[in-house]
Image 1 (tube, rainbow, N blue to C red):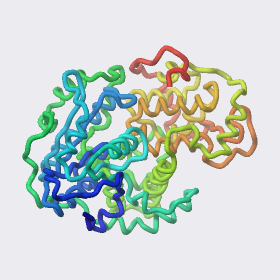
Image 2: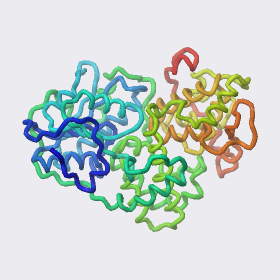
Image 3: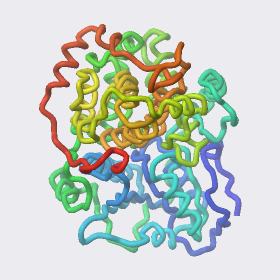
Image 4: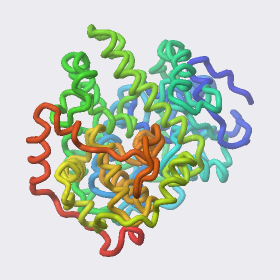
Amino acid sequence: MDIDWSDDIADRLRALNAVELSPKSGAKYVLCWVQQTLRAWDNPLIDAAIELGNTLGLPVLVYHGVREDYPYASDRLHHFLIHASRDLQQNCVKRGLRCVSYVEREGHREKGLVYRLAESAVAVLTDDHPTFVARAQANRFAAKCERPMFAVDTARLVPTRMLPVGLNTTPAFRKASGALRSEYEAHRCNFAAEVPSYDGNLCFADLSLRAKTDDEIAAIIAECDIDHSLPPALDFTPTAKAALCALDDFVANRLKIYPYRRNNPAEEDGVSRLSPYLHFGVIGPRTITAAVRASDVPANAKWKYLDELLTWREYFHYQAYQHEIPDSFATLPEKPRLSLLAHAYDERPVLYTLCDLVHGRTDDETWNAAQRQWLETGYMHNNLRMYWGKQIIKWTRDPEIAWKTACYLNDRLALDGRDPATYGNMRWVFGMSKPSWQEQPIYGWVPPKSDRAIRKRDGATDWLKDWATRDIVSIYVPDNKPEDAL
């Protein structure tokens, strides 16, 4: 059976297997498997599931699960994931949808849970992400699933699949994406379910996160077999309400100064700090775009912010889909990659241990400040990330180890790590930008970066000194060389 998807949904869908849709299969629901888009509103995945359910006269069952074995699983990431999952469940109830949750832990380790949920589904829909575990997990599941499965583009304003191949520069991407933005900004969202919420039995006991207190969630996390040495990052409340409040505050009070303050780490009010919410899908780019468009601020401020959100961020997503392993050193453009490798055996000024790097114990105050902020808060200012990454190249044995070290720190510590945007940022650090004016030791034709411009900004020297000397948490780091630990 073919489904006549609405224009608001069709461009965002891609089939992950060739199983035919059979409305007479005795199915009980449409399974909406949320992996990373942890919001109930303005979520194309949920809207697509509702549209299919309305067409077939079936309810939607929204499911989100948290396993223990994903890379870098920790109290930090679990805290954000599970609190956001609670918020998702609470808001799904407001939409008239049943949302169920599962957290793998001692005494609660289910095998093949999504497969069993799919047995009662007419189809499975999941969110479409190019990095970390979501991509491989969805493809692996689709290959074995006996139900039709679709991936839905939820993380980008313009669906990546609607853009032509071969957009190899940001100007080319900006032009192609920009021509389509108004169309996707105008699409409908928050479809109404026409079928009552599913009230049937399930193949497992729902954790009912929506009714859990913060203390009860903390107790659940304590039962998980994960890294308990890395504490939660409490600067970011994992709810849609908190994300919207952060957006409203930024648009009302700080967007107008964004072009002038965005590069100063000492002035955190110069940036939106929405990247953790975007990474976990607690807020979407369409919601942000609409708020920025409607704001009463100068046009240059709107353009600059939306260019970062819709050009640079979505271009990095576009690039991630071009690679089987988006976080691989091999994804670097050939010229800078070969230039770095040609200098792999150049003498380094110092080689720091992974433990010293994790805890910001180097001879570089600027780098230490950036790293310690990351370790403590799960967030690093974007302008500092450029300098931070450049230094790692000269402090590790060779460029491939430098890349792996940067990925390790990013993916383990950052709330917005494990993401196409942060991998794109690192590719820029490792040479995707314009080549240096001269070939240099260690870097080859990849331009190094000084911290002089950072230190000239208002309040930056005091800010850097403060963060570089702060007492910070000590976390577990494997007691071996970085290349063995990564």
